[in-house]
Length: 460
Ligand SMILES: [Zn+2]
Image: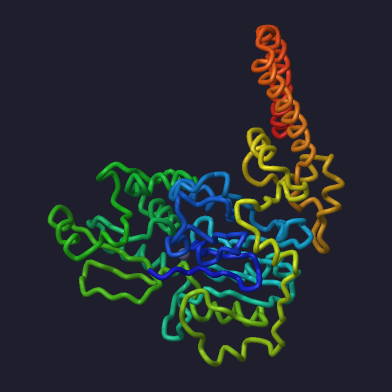
């Protein structure tokens, strides 16, 4: 299976690319969605590099690939986030997620920084509403467009998904005595299944593995793992074959439907291939590119563009990217010491302090709005970006970090005193242990109080 990820040249960014040995200088990793051709190389052993994705993709990443929570940073759609691209935070990246209309959690990334603006579509099904996204409306010029060209073929016509859904309904309606098997990948087309369940008033039978995914997606209550409970069954596509269909038909008349935009054929009269696609059609791609008019265009999937597409692109000179020295240094730094956006404003503490801080500091990126934390006014001003409302920017909760840091220092000092007294002044050991234990208890209580206060504040 080919992998559809890319390292963005002259930046510390990679999208859907997980072979870190081939890109040791990359510091920020982005995941568009959870289809396997976009996660190749990503495993549960992933570490020391932050992964940014939508919230749904983050949940699926934990469920399916068991990547550790601490490396996953979920971002909300439509909000511009600032991420540091060097050690001091002098060079920042603004990233905004746009719904890709592909499968649950799938997003496009709009990156803005010293390199100009780059739109990375990932897999997407074009819809005119995408062009009305505030970030694309305010950003008049896209320097580089990374385009999902899966179906960029003039010979392939793909109807809108509503039309393909009607075709599927017609097939089912015209076979009232048949059971229906629908071949799908492990993620995607859940809306189609929901619509069929409602239309034909039946449960949709799924495997235990698919049910776990569906629970994360919070879909309609139309799915079951009970064998024979419904007329429609969703199966992994590779499990559907002529031999299997023959076996199923021995028990009960059964037909298979394969909703796909790919050009596949079957001679079996019980297999129906319907052009239901989660990728853009050729015409849609043409509309998208001619509306965006990017300065340059790169293909995500291996292939080549129709020659006449050059007419769609404006004849602008391509922006020459000059990488700032601070970013270059950041990329040469050994991984594992990168700053997350929750800490990059601080100076790097030594390893010991980082370990102590890790005990109390929450994992992941902390993003808070003005509404939640009015004390963040100053941070908000520092983080404001021209063109974006300040309240919508992700902010850092420095106050809480500092409080924890001070308490950690007290804790460390008390532990040192306790160890010294125990080892050096053995005769005084019982008294010192009693006193120090009291002090430790006091500090820990203080710390728990801060945590409790914070969580109360969050829930208000
Ligand atoms: Zn996909």
